[in-house]
Length: 284
Image 1 (cartoon, rainbow, N blue to C red):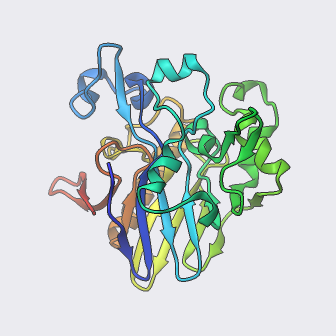
Image 2: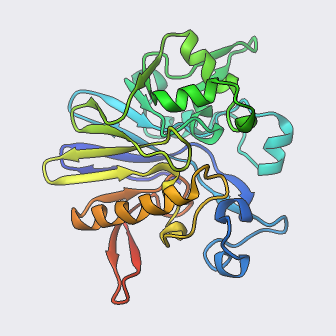
């Protein structure tokens, strides 16, 4: 679906699909019983739910960047079939619909390095050689996340894939940051942990307008309840604590909340209902 630009003060924000896929519903909702989550995400005959990889182009007065990159086109046939992944390079194809080509991108911020967030940063050329997609861009990653993704830690085997990240380092495109860091004026990353040890959120601020990409801390509108978390979360109790403070902050400052995986609504504003429940209202 081709979406429209969302103004955030002088910044412009564009949701772009990095590719849809179908993931086991239990994986997306962890300990939440199916009888509850299926009201918000209808499973198919294989018990999978539709998931989007929402990437966000950010236009500032001085740069053009992108948050996350979807899964790209490198995955093997088994995983592509199991998750009904799109063919080709979904992000590049969808950027082209808006007249954007990869060489225009100045920076890429990666919330974390799971394949469905970083896979679109590296592609195979005609000879099969791996090469960066955004050849001019610096790729912003938390030091902790890079250490876990490249450390060959036995407990994390299957969570990270060298083909997604090593070519970026080999090309000199990786910029590791440590904690809260301003990337360009108005765009700041903050280490959150929770989903992974080095997971980061991305805040956009221009005047009194602001937005926050919480990554997989709250991946869809169905995950607004505090205890609805992913089975992939490495630190689920941390995620629950983070969500509570995140929602308070978003509501207090009237920020736009950006979802990493919602297939229908990539951006919302939040309010609380009379009984204190967090409610999302679509933006854009």
